[in-house]
Image (cartoon, rainbow, N blue to C red; front, side, top):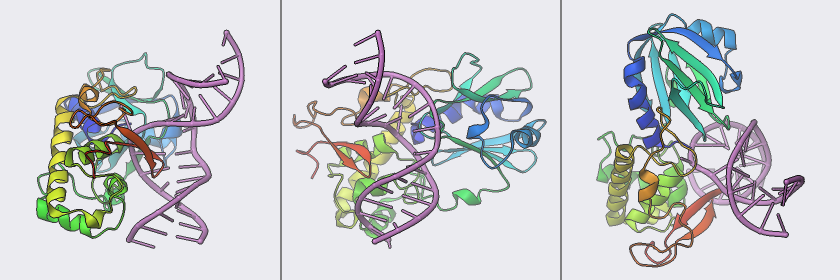
Length: 266
DNA sequence: CGGGCACCCTGGTGGC
DNA sequence: TGCCACCAGGGTGCCC
């Protein structure tokens, strides 16, 4: 479910609760989301450790621990972190902090993965962060030219660019007026600039709007986002395009629903 | 490298 | 009301 904006919203919400706080207690209700480590070892690696930093890379949340190890959380399709809500039906484990605050990992679908790692080697092949400031027009255009894939598929590839998912890939292509099936190496410099602009604008706007709750996404306070009210094509099959009045179309690309306006995306 | 697909797992929805 | 196929914001691995 969560793409870059949703993960970033959650990170910001829980930052003050976890930063420089020591984990006092771990409760595990369903260990299937915890990968590569036994529940007992998971507890042992966390209890008594302080979280020295919490950052985000692509759709990963990175908790640095005082032990030097890393708690790496990926929310998958339906995961979220909820502050102090014991009533959640899909709670999988809970991090209890000094002072009594509790954060629950909640995931109805269990595509999410939680790991304890020695380093961030696992993330080394992820592409640039679109909101990081380091990604310029020239660089982005050169990146596009290196591949000969349908542009929508490329935008979803985390090794190409970090953080875009199905919603924002569709929205960014709409913004730039690019058909999702266009081959990436055929995108002009002008279109490439527009696409990068769209990616940055839409992701920033979504963070400000608290992310998109197209389905059931809720943030760390259990609230829905507002960005779904600003989406132009995603989930709008058959509805009029607000730019040209044409009908939004849905096709399948790489086994993912893909929404676009056939009239203004060429 | 690119394309296509199965698969991981669970739940909600819409059609019949 | 009941059943079932289909769909879902992600990612990996395999085969051609």
